[in-house]
Image (cartoon, rainbow, N blue to C red; front, side, top):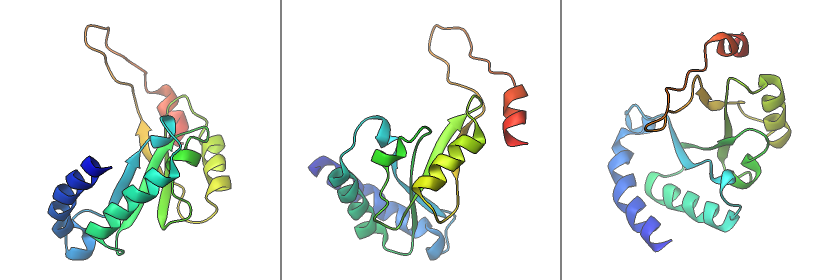
Length: 140
């Protein structure tokens, strides 16, 4: 965690002037991205949040994001003032995913912070094309 603390100690003070509560355009700060897909160390998550809080303060809206299907149980901080958000794409069932999130986080906004309208391409592979039919159906 020493390297993380040093890096955040350099990065976060540079961000602070751009926070919304300081007149800047940054309205939310993401503490971790999809950590629930890789680990379930709540001590790590709490330390990371504390680094952000130390450098950015309490007037910030913090959030985490994890994939659908309940991965946010390991990648979120429900005991802290941190919004749990989810991410998913065209193949997900919107009602199912938001119901799962709401069962985990009963209050606050239900947010998909990464709605995948397509998919990534891998070098040397054919271009990934998802079509727009499912995307249009998802947001209707």
